[in-house]
Image: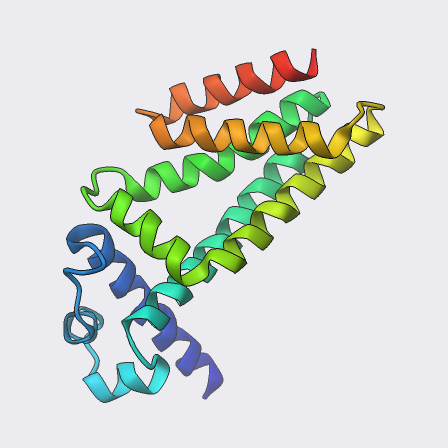
Length: 180
């Protein structure tokens, strides 16, 4: 039973994510989510209290995927600078791919921050800690400050990136220059 429940929840989140990207947060209703997921509204409300809770759940699911992409990049081959750049490029590349073509990106960033600001801050702090650990292992001090600058710089690059190749190249450039 739990498996079916998890599959249904994933289908609801997939439908919500699709609609949020296509119509924006404000332009998406609970009724539309239920319709897109092909479930009755009571099924949707049995899983989520309201649209805010749906968006918070999509954000949580996305952060899990971002963390996995980051860890894969950080755990791969190469120098510490290459691994850090790849990890951040993979994380931000996933967001860029997800938001590609959505005219509602800024609204969704704003709503994600409003609803999940503490969770997002905790997630970003975990990235800083992982990078700081890599930098400390290299003997780079102050490792935490450098890690915060790298993460903030990558975030800024990502917010203005036009495509994945430029995103990865620019993050790589930033990391290599800061760690040179």
